[in-house]
Amino acid sequence: MVAAGTTTTFPEVGGHAGFDLVDTVHWRLDDRRAIDTLSSYDDVVRWCNQTGVVPNGDGGLQAMASGAPEAAAREHAAVIALREAIYEAVFESSPSAVELIAHEYVDALTRSVLAHDDTGVSWSWRVPSDLTGPRAAIAVLAHELLTSDLRAARQCGDDACGWVYLDTSPRHNRIWCTAAGCGNRNRVARHQAKKHA
Image (cartoon, one colour):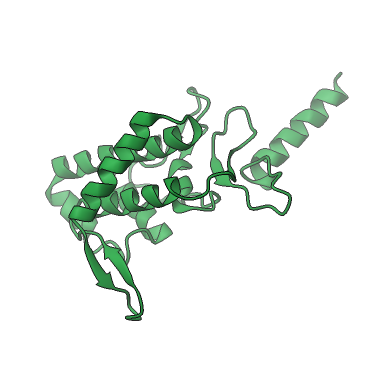
């Protein structure tokens, strides 16, 4: 876990905000090293602000969360459930995960309004500006991801990493979440293994 109050820059290597959300768990495939960087509702708000998932900033969500800690904790738990549902739906084909995303999406739309964007040219969903806003925005992006072409969805080739991404490389042969991270570490490990063999 990340210590409370620490500022975290969240990874953005997924190619879609839904995958970037999944990637807030570091070392997903190794229970001993797993780190969840969304340890609080405030972390969820920081992630939303960094990725632009909630338009126009947080609108005082952190202050609202301070005033209603139980509600913030429920929303945090619901966002974590959505994050795990994205992973399970895409990479494990879990029907219950898809059902959760569908339910949250419908619920998000019932609490949102359809409004002109800033240019007045197109319409978009405006999620609630209360504590449920991040969950609603994440439900909409999860639905968008699940109903898109997922043939390019990949998981890092590292045995412990677990980060996920859309492979948009020219030959669609990307193996690692990042070449500088897992790619380099695995190349060095292979070289060392050959050297000592």
